[in-house]
Length: 245
Image (tube, rainbow, N blue to C red):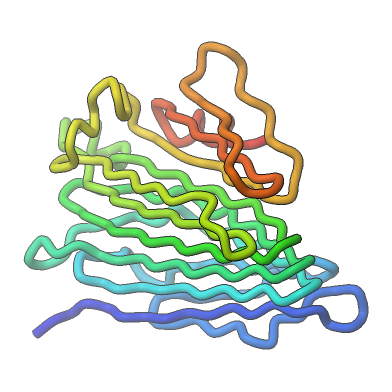
């Protein structure tokens, strides 16, 4: 008998008519809880995991729809820890974000950590209207501290990120890190680091490039006012410093 969890959570943000943002749809699912954490012009939501995981075999999804003129900030209460499940099956985490004209989304969760023996497949689709604004941060950490301390290998993280702006694709990239991924720890990939991440900004000033001596690159994307800051670091703390403007 399968013990895998299947959950679909949804957030809809729209103007409240008083200069703020209302959340007419704030629906958690399964282990995903979505408490509202602040009001004002930008609504705030924290993604909370009500149980450990995701475990191998779990299928979790979150859909966010930010309507014209609304502003939404989404974070998480803690890191997401990918854990092994029965039969070695991968877990799936699907994110689908739509941001309308003159709307704004900040997606700034805590890192995803791949524990020994785990495998997580993440698929993120972001659809931006002309004039939509976005801050999107993605951080991946291979192995928990106590996994590495006992010499255990990390888990595997495979992440696909696609972004469309005004109907035009501006970013489509996949990262595949951890045991079993081709050359994942070689000089053309992590090069000995254990944390990797991106900061995608659209409709905002480009973030500053970290000082020389760090493994980071700032790319201008083909969209309007769109940039991607990519960084590698030995650990999550130093990665966060590189990805914080």
